[in-house]
Image (cartoon, rainbow, N blue to C red; front, side, top):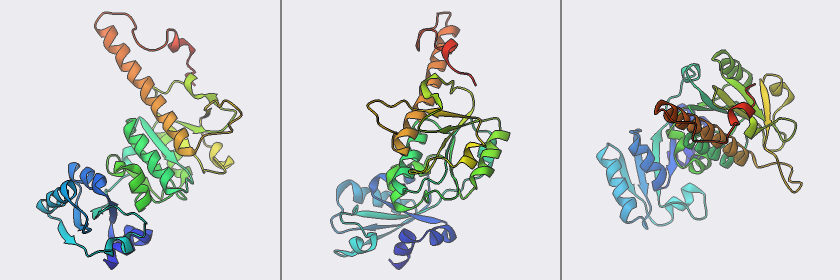
Length: 280
């Protein structure tokens, strides 16, 4: 259990071992569905039913399963009400090669809160992004809190770590992606932008936003309009809104293509939207 404790608390150990800790049945289920390597599973005494069955499924795929005594998991996990299951899982490999062929990437620049980082990975995966870049300074995507907030999405798409933001943005620009940063004010209204073209949504620090040095490297900026004098959304909420605007526009385009292929008229989206959207 000492190793599990180190994996939970120290990023350096997660990096050197190439493993992370998945807390709870949901993340383990995703790992098994995707064929990730599960090294070991630890069960609290109160684990029953579906949780035990999931541990058995992991055992059948080669994982070692350990039954823990009362209170052991609570001491190791360091949370008040931990999940009754922990699993040690191989960290998926992610190469910058994915950026050369991507059409939609989310870039986190100095997003410090693990919960925000995990939520952004989850939203990116749900909206169909090809990859997430957690640039240097961003929370470890395989921190237990990040993994938990992602609901296992860190296993569903490539998540690149430790790239410097300027390097990542240069690579994305060279690959033909439009690099668009979210700013509280002064950017184009997000719903008036054409997100169908290859793009990277760039999100900054929770308090300071995007550094001027990073803004200078972008192709454009977007703003989510606020009502009632609200300054801005939480970064994970703003990122989710933008991710699903990308997904909405691309879904509408596919629907319109199907309609045209069938010999009909444009049947989806707002009339005239193609004329009104800002194509950069």
